[in-house]
Image (cartoon, rainbow, N blue to C red):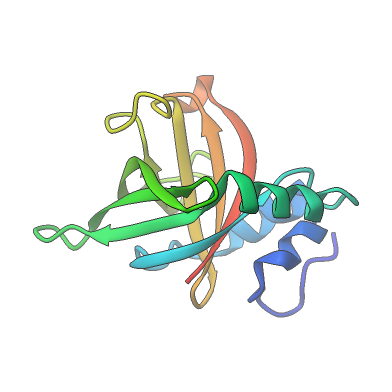
Length: 159
């Protein structure tokens, strides 16, 4: 594996890596702080292939633009988020945000939990870690428990 020698600061660089390389970067990163504000999103589908960049641009224009994190006013270890969707960046599909154990490697990560906040995404769980200042790498799972879940894709957020 030829992982970047320096931390990735541009999420577009993730598109050139394989899924295994992305998992390695995720495993090596600390959870980091729960993000605040608006993160620009990059969907990472078919990473390391010639179509990855085209798919990411298409998704960003027409479907998913990123996530907006709002800290919990009572508990600083929690937040909520809304996804920015469609052409206008409509904020919808809410998740609860908190630190917990990663399904990928059993270490601490930031969990984006849709199971109690969204009918359309109730089977989705995202995990993110801060791989460089303001840049988070994420993994998307389909399922409600680790033993019955499937890793779907990776994504990145830049704040």
